[in-house]
Amino acid sequence: MTRHAFCAIAVLASLSAAIAVPCDAEEVVPHVTIGTQEVGLSVGYLLPVRLTTDHTTKQKGPALMPSWMMTLTDPIGRSWYRGQISIGAEVVYIQFQEPVVSNGIGFTPKIKYIFVAHNRIRPYLEFAGGPFWTDFTNKVPEESSSFNFILTAGVGCSFFVTSQTSINVGWRFHHISNAGTSYPNVGLNSSLPFAGFSFFF
Image 1 (cartoon, rainbow, N blue to C red):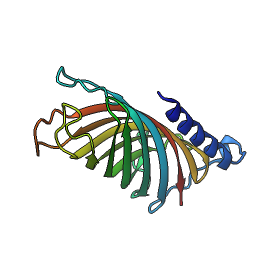
Image 2 (image 1 turned 120 degrees about the vertical axis):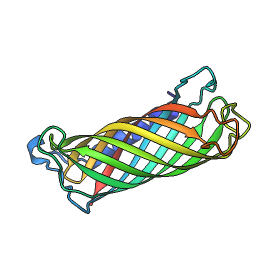
Image 3 (image 1 turned 180 degrees about the vertical axis):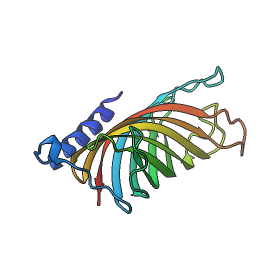
Image 4 (image 1 turned 90 degrees about the vertical axis):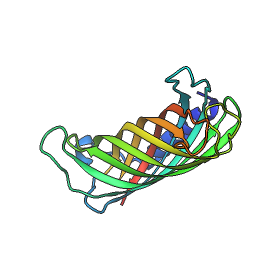
């Protein structure tokens, strides 16, 4: 991971600590109901995942992901899987630093299932996908088009420092391809650990 990625995560941690208020763990009860909106910002660092011998590119680089979500349901279920469903959208910006410096930006509708059984500590599953534009056409052997799609699936955990503010950490699997609109189209797969924060209102 580069110095830039470390600095970005350190800044997020400092901001989260600054907005946190001292309180006992039992006093923090997240205020998330139907219609609650979430605005968040996450940063991470993209690492290559080569699934076949055709995947030769070792793409790496920092990622920035502002997002908006809305809670659709009250808690569902009665056991450890008790949770809420949220939908929203996210902008994904990635600066690929290897093998060549290039950029990608996309817009992805998103769905998230948040486990609420542990109150202020809330694990979640998330899935997203949408159009993704890049400038690495003819720069990597796996892709031949500037217009692509990005699909993501991930897990994470939100730690509520107040009833309306959380620190988030997680991991995602990313797949970038042009869905067969041009060839070659082997696709690029990557791993993305990330950290960030969210405000709920």
